Amino acid sequence: MDINKMMREAQKLQAKMQQDMQQAQEQLAEERIEGSAGGGAVSCVVNGHKQLISIKIAPEAVDPADIDTLQDLVFLAVSDALSSAERRAEEVMEKVRGGLKIPGLDMGGFGF
Image (cartoon, rainbow, N blue to C red; front, side, top):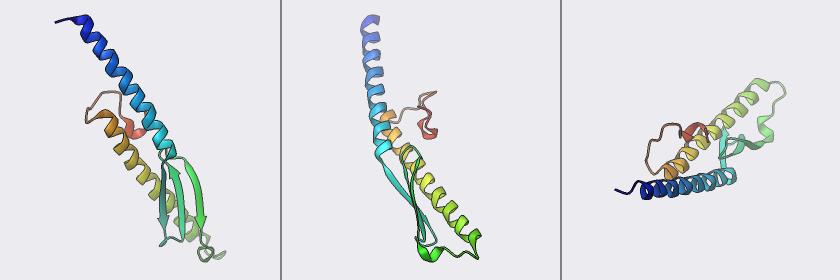
């Protein structure tokens, strides 16, 4: 068993994984994930890194006498989008990991 050959193979594998990780990060930055509430009265878009991109509020959702409902709808729409972004990031990172559970590489929480 040639230990030097094994080390070179391990280094190649590490470089490939780093490249795949970089590509996954770039892909997630470009992803657009929508969340909504109130039957679409409020919608928002986040990227795969859980950064808020936009919020849209339908005019009929704006009632100056009922700001609490609007606030709840915004909160729910953003929460919906962030949850979807979390699931999407886990899908993308699972492809990078190839099913491997590597300590210190838990990408679900964006620890890359």
